[in-house]
Length: 216
Image (tube, rainbow, N blue to C red; front, top):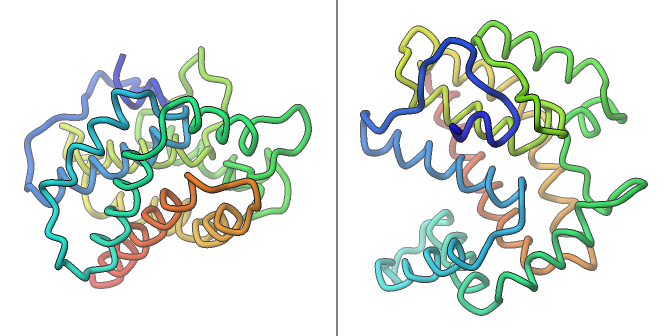
C-alpha cells in the first residue's frame, strides 16, 4: 500500500511516489510525510527511536528556526515512550463529539465539517487522478491526507501531475488558509504537550513552503 493510499487518498492512475529528484525536494516530501504520519496515527516506538537517533546528526549551533523546531521534536521523541504519545493523541484528536483539536481543514476554513472546502479538495484530487481509499474513514480535508497529496505532488513519477505549479496551487488553496490557526489550537490546548513541538515544526515548515511558492 502506498503512502498516498494509507493516509486517505489513493492514486487511480498507477503512478507512484518515487525517490528520484533533487535532494531538497525529497527532503520536503519526507517532511510532509512525517507530519502526515504524526497526525494520522500516534507514533510507534520504532518511529520515535528513528527520530531520536538523528540527534547526533544535528548541528547544535544551527539557529535556523526549522532546525530548532526539529531539535525540539527530537527531544520529545527521545524522552517520551509511544504509550504517552498514544494517550495524548486519543485525548485530544479522538472524540465521539467535537475533539479538543479538529484535524480537518473545512472546520477552520468554513466553521463546520464537510463544507465547501472539502468539495473543492475532492475536485482537485479528481483532477490529479486521486481518490479516497475505501478503508480510510477520515475525509480528504484531513491534515494528513493533504500533506500526503503534497508529498505526491513533489515526489510522484508523473511530471504532468507532480510539478511545482500544482504544488503551489494546491498548497495555497487547501493548506495555507488554515494551517496557522490549526497550529495555534494545538499550541493552546492545555492537555497537549508532546504535539506542541510537532505543531511548531509544521508551522515553520509550511511557512517556508509558502515563502517559496510566493517567489515563483
